[in-house]
Length: 350
Image (cartoon, rainbow, N blue to C red; front, side, top):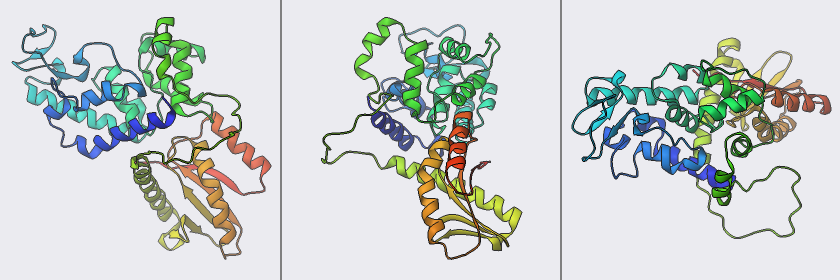
């Protein structure tokens, strides 16, 4: 599959299961026999190409509907219809409500990049981290098997043990992601190297991501036919952008005063007026600082060139996440080679 096809699957999931929808989720929408449109079916089956979480039994969902002919598992709580993890409650209604609260919390923590807090939640890692990835704005690598994560961590120099926290490994993978690689291409590189045996490689060769690394040859033809692309990704990006823009505006108003902070003046996301200089902010929702800068810098230069105020101008690209070591190399390259007062700023979402 191509990266675009994978992004379309991700878009479809977020369109079907936005965080707001999780608050009204029913047990029938969450899990059920014969229903291919449940939340758990989307996590495990419909988004499998975004990172497989196969393994364990259906108890990884916290609660599941049993086949009528199957026996109640002895290790879990159960009634005539459902089985569930004991820690979630004494009956299926209580258990589901507690599981739903954890799913909602996972989604919110992932959206805000607070991955270290996921370890506190009871849902099994295979399921929990797949949910987190889908709501993380592609800030997690979609690899979930513990043994594979440990191999990757060892490769990057981390000493692992049974007590090693999964968030630390995910952070390590992100810190080592080359700035030019899409998250799905990066995932494939890591999983092909550390997660597959030869049988898996042969079986899934036909579904491999087609975006290959390395030198890209010049095109000799151009496909001008209509291309399908869901509109969801731009909508989702806009919603994230709006959240970030308002958070940055709030912090600047608190520090500099309402009268000095202008929103959307001449298309500039935020303009900060100071006695000796002006700061132009362009907010981007890309999952990495380098992506935000790549998308924003041309706009900032255009806005700066057309601004009528003669004061010196500072140019800041703002995004949700801190700059990794690879991002910093890109930032420093720009600072060294362009005569531009430029920087990147992280926006904290609460």
